[in-house]
Image (cartoon, rainbow, N blue to C red; front, side, top):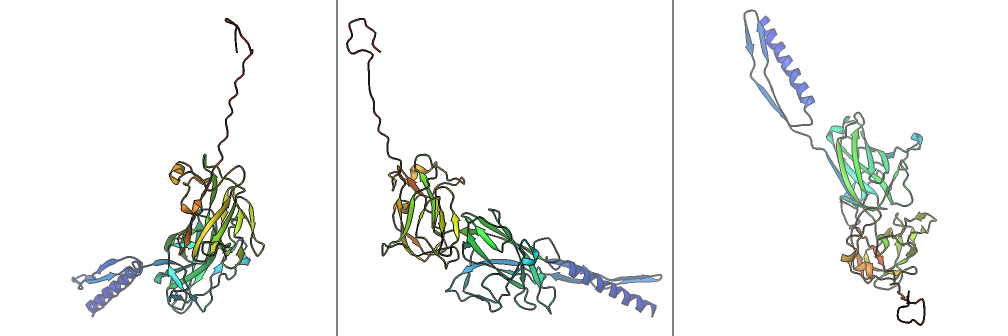
Length: 369
């Protein structure tokens, strides 16, 4: 009887050890082998080996952009925004419990569109009887930082769908205002954490797109030129294009002056940096830019794109000069960014050479200056 009791105790120890090992290995593939052994004064006995392989549970973070033609629809609970003032946390975005319709996977987001993301993390599904949450931090390379509390889209699903509004900058960004301010060339870092840990369980980096934008610059030295009027025209009708602000709804001027403040239809102002112009949103189509250069500059430039290869934008990137920089038609057809920098020529300065002499009549040997 004592021998049987010892064997049962050994098996209990083995089971407890195996369960503990399984719990600690749930996030990586691990091979666990356990053998129970009992020893007593007159002998010992070992059990058969028990081997268990624990498969890793994949965690994925996928980003999406709106696509009205896509059949992909997400169920979502509107996330809470952790604003600068804790009491200001409030639901954001157009999403609701009914879901987000028409999205497509993308590693890019256009300023003015909502940024949508889905975290599939079974390890964050801690309570199968309740809606769990994760904390998501979004940081842009230009300095904006926003934090969301994102809920599981259904009980025991292990999937967390979040959404946050974006807008083009300027105006100046404001950290903790529940919207991402995006500049051209920005990258957005997304980190997801369970509420009980500071270590990210998933990360992602996505790019930012800003529709037609660029800098008018001196074709000789690359200096930004403010005061040039840039008008976006519909290439089919020849009329001023229909342009929208970053929200995709508010009307925005189709004709602006580089480096000056622009006011949209809702009264929102945009202070543009020197030489810069921007048309935040426009429908897919064919367009061209009409440029009226400030004196003494002229447009279009008589120089070729290759002649600007050594010149750099104020941020240190090369200028993007193409056919549209000279008034040719360009197309908006998808998420690809459209950057069009505009070279402006200074007219040649006439050189006058006048010769004078210190005397009108001279004899041999006289000094003439």
